[in-house]
Each structure stands twice: as structure tokens, then as C-alpha cells.
Amino acid sequence: MIKELVKDDAVLSVPCEPATAEDAPVAQDLVDTLASIEDAVCLAANQIGVTKAIVAYQDDDGNAHVMYNPKILMALGSAKVEETCLSREEPARVTRFAKIKVSFDELVDGQLKARRRDYIGWTAQMIQHMVDHCKGKLV
Image (cartoon, rainbow, N blue to C red; front, side, top):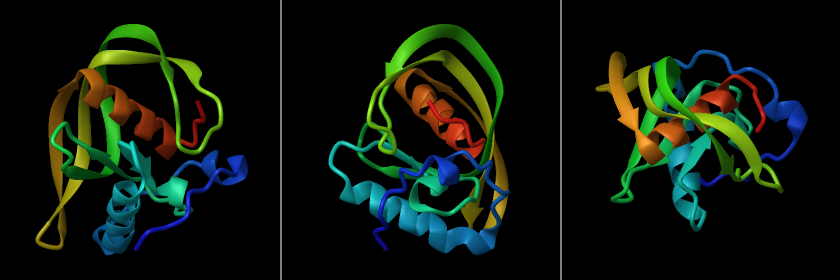
């Protein structure tokens, strides 16, 4: 279901709770909402009003990917970049890393399965942005 975006700092600044397989409807709402917003590439659950550690992003082919409980394990190649956010009016300068290693859970056959992957470039930047959202960190 498509949800309205939250722009309230009081909601967005709350660290998210760990997600479980029972939160699959929230993940679907994230994917649906992301697909409904022109030029949007990523969303975190707190941006639709749910304080669970779930994020969704689109790859270069427009396919949606969902991560439950993402954590950045390693980061290399820091740089200052300017980012925009669907929940904020103005762009912000933040430090992002060119390469990251992420642990996260993926929903497979109704169960969360632990994953660990490396990401680079734009995808790495999106994931870092969403992990910040999960921590309640506003850009």
C-alpha cells in the first residue's frame, strides 16, 4: 500500500527497532511507496511512519531491493557529498564512503536470512543514507 511520507523530525529522529519476518507488510509498503514517487531511489520505514529497521532501494535497472536490519561493517574512501532526502526540504553535505560492507537480513520463504555484501558507488551511498535513517540520524 502506498503511504504518505513523514517529514516530522520527532518521528525521523527516533532510532528504529529491529525488524522481524512479521514486518513483511511494512517492507511491501516501502516498495509500493518508493515505486509511486517519481525520481525516488530509496526509502526507510521511518519515512512512512514505521520505526522498524527496514529499507528499500532501486538498482540501476529499477528493481527494488529490501534490507531488514542493515548495519555497515566496514567503510572505505570517505568523501563529502551533497545529498537530498525525500523527508527534508534542503540538500545537506555529508560524509559518505565509496565502498562499504553491509550485514542485513533478507526475507526468504517467510524467514529472515542473514546476508553480507559489499557495495560501491551510488548504491553504497543510498544504503549509507538509509542506515542513517534507521539510526534516527537526520542529514
